[in-house]
Length: 637
Image (cartoon, rainbow, N blue to C red):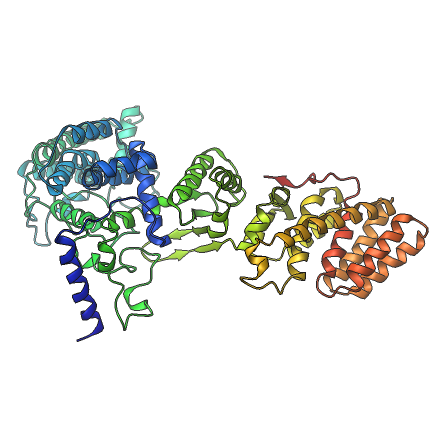
């Protein structure tokens, strides 16, 4: 017997034990798996957006009656948001009606509850969307097979009659040579040639022209008026059909199920059956119910892979596939509504222009919920969404301080993607914050100093905090900022405080490159390193101020900086020191010069690890003479 079969037997036995009386926990909490937890957060976000329940209120609702939440409130909320996200017209009053009905009524079981919500509210919700999908002009071609025989479920005589009448007018419009030029003019079509087809959008534009009075031909007016009348009659008849057979009483049969298909789709969740184009209303109902109830008889629910979410590899790409599939059975006892959460996965993310979809995640639901909630509120207000970290950092720190959860900073991840659909993944990033970075960033003066956008090119700004969290060398960023300001003849544009703090951090991390994981320093939160960074900044700033006094001629400053920058770019320490000391000797006698000489010998001449950082700090001092700590061309967050 294979190992997979053995596992199946084990979990089948486990299922029997569960059914025999084990209590399944419905408590809403994180699992420790970011992927599933993102779905749980997405579920919370969805229910809050639709019903206005925050996390605590939702927990209360689940505690009172979990089946009412998952089989009643959830399916409606999910499809309500689907419509709303696509800018479809939806009435908020239907939400109040649903809540009133579900609070007032009682149901035999979760199946009856789900079917009630499906017919009375979900079908009602999709009436206009369904009518629109049916009323498009190419539907006449869809109701018949290649032999001209009406397809099963499309044989409502009145519907077919109205479609044929409307099709007749469309053909007359296409075949009337006298109207061809005027129609082309209205539709902005190219001159010459015949119009072989009128799309539904074309016909709507013609009707708009009719209603605005811009059509001159009486013949065209007459035909479009007749088309408009038929279209209105068809719309009215379809509305009666839908309400009568799905909402007022559910009369959908296997034969007409496809005709009454709810027009919903998803590139992200293509393999969930209720999104499948080939399935009808009944099959959609069954599929959605099976997903909520974790019905493993549905093949799509049997494993966790790319079939259910594009973030995952396919079944054949799992490295342990020869031992066992990643079976969803192992989750059923602990997470009975797993597929509800997986369907809500995308709702955990907040969308930012020019960045993508972003999730801040820690292993604590309350904290993650609060941070991302504030993030969404802030996202709606902020205009500049070009920097992910710029618009989020203050929100994160505020929540961490409020919850007294500093430790969570080092257990937090940022997950980002630019695009996910049925075929592609673009711009997916997972960014973690190490204990070292967390310890440094929790210092207010350091964090505030790094919370700055620096210009490094004509059209490019970079946020220091982002580079630091991504574990990139800060020297590279500051050197680009300094070189740009020198090139643009704008020394005052240098942000001295931010640049020197960044150099101090970069310097001390370089000089302490032998810090070991789980060392005493690790467990103390790198306290001594943080103190070294503060002291280093003080030293760099002091000497930057001193060297700024040595040079009082603007052109002289720029000339020596060009030479010093050239030496830094070439990593030529000898050339850098010689250029600097030669200038010092010309101004011998100054107390500042004497102290600067000592600084140069101690931190540049005899320093193999980070001499460039100290050297660049002196260049900043020379260039930024007279400038404020926050440079004129830097943006404070």
